[in-house]
Image (tube, rainbow, N blue to C red; front, top):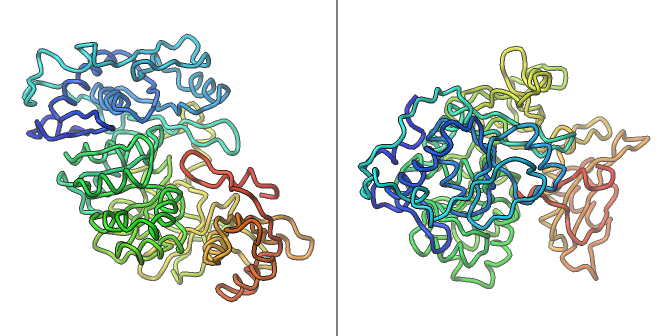
Length: 494
């Protein structure tokens, strides 16, 4: 298999590969640093990385991948019980960390190995020329060898380790390069966490595979976004929470609007971006945010293309190499795409994971007999192939009065009301309807929230009467995880 990072072996030399705050590494320096890490971990079997938003995290992951060693990214915010489960399940031989990291007791006997500039072999080797002409480890890994073991959120039980082969990483990044016209000239800015596929695979490994640059903000803020886009960054990756903050800031910050207008590509993922935020950003900047759809087990499945129509509320078309279909509850494949018929997404392609680590029964249950992954995501598809996600099968598909209703479109309608700041929709049992629609809202003005009837009528006018919420509940904030996804199981009745 060809290298995951051809630019490390090519002529990129003095081009900046990574920048975290005021610290950076050129491709030559990254080759030296990651090569030193590869030397350390070559016989480690499997390594964990304490995935703080720092330069060392990226170096550790690249170094392990150069050595052909599987990486387990660890969320530094994980609770002790979850962390202990992940470590006992994945059994890494060591944990790579940034210098000064204090690892929790849950790591037990797993050895922590800090990477520091003070260690000459960690940040530069005598046998690697500073201009990038030194030798890196020969890439002997097969395309089916594990690259990453990323743990799912564990909403229905302990987190499962999705084993992502090197083939999946390469296939996803190359498909996105095709869809987004992504090249080595692009400079990506983001502030995403590095323990999940969005921030790590797309946000760090993606630019490095192309030979481009990534500038990580450490922590997301609109000032940092504007600074980097004004300073030559061409792409911005974010989650809906980040774009919502941008949309909220734009009316009072013309400099931010101007900076966003300079971007070549604004990409949102990990959850649906409300149509209202799409419209506010476009009105202020002239730019369209494009969305893509993926998950831990599949990496990326679809995207709006850079040369395609950026339709708010959709996640575009299947990426090259990805086969996507929608199926009814009884397994019947939907063949007529009318933009209304709801089905579960099933996918097949080189982007898929190979197994849940040590869970053969769960792995078998996740796939159909012909090798398609059952995503659990419900969607509709337009005649031209565009896909619109309507929610998760377990939490977002509401069966009310004989209708199958996706929570996402109701949430979008609620967010168009000026009195609603945040919204989530769930179903709860109803003796007459089967399930009734429940709206959970954060009012724009807590002292004068919109009435239940006003919100119900607002939704009924925009969608259909049977999609109006029957119950409205007010909250100070919606529960969200680290990626900004609403945690609906934390809402009563979900």
